[in-house]
Image (cartoon, rainbow, N blue to C red; front, side, top):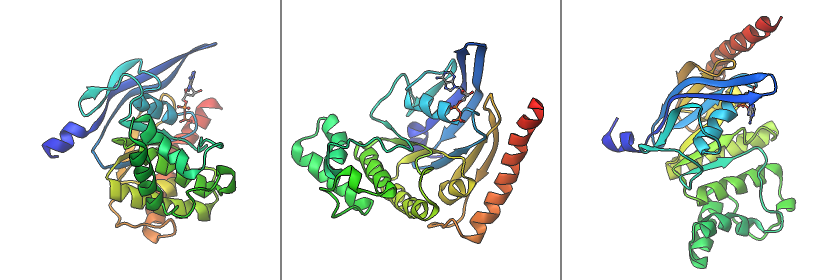
Length: 263
Ligand code: ADP
């Protein structure tokens, strides 16, 4: 690891999270340690309710750990900030603004001039191949195109870390393949760090440098796979399917151990 990589890394340091609940306390995460290098693409997988979104929200600064610390570039995360952008399954675009105005919103909030807003928005719309759709309304777009607008808007905010919470879960398989291509290309061109939550193992292997499996609740680091397959990858590649099968077997083992505990 170089000094610059060390300085800009995202560190999750012994993070635990408890939520008070009607029946006592829900322990969502326990002692999670994770170091993500600048420009690395991490996918987090795990059974439903194991704490994946909790971890992402903590990194986003929308909530704080009960114990432990999250640092970006050595500075503790104490709340939301422009260095981290969160993208959800629901694109959360503004329906009263056209495509370009939606993307311009990010540099506008950062105080950029009108000219810069337009330039930046155009750059990222071109990057996700939405040239020609600048003046379209959100309701005129397909689900995949909306997610590409949302991705362009996230990138236009120029964060250090892009946090993605099952952003493509509602898309059909063909559209998802296409959006994966766009995301991979945009990621390679921008060099952003990506932390991506999914329950789709093929998607994780298709996209990630490292796949992290969280255990059943309380979520703890259960296993890590480094994916060194050449890029661009495709969901139907044999090597992707083989690695995904290994990971799926371990994921099933983890999820079924919880089912057994409940029986
Ligand atoms: P995942 O994303 O892996 O499905 P979550 O991170 O959403 O899991 O949730 C982990 C656990 O924490 C679940 O049991 C969930 O009910 C609980 N939880 C999540 N957010 C809250 C909250 N704001 N208040 C109380 N409990 C929560």
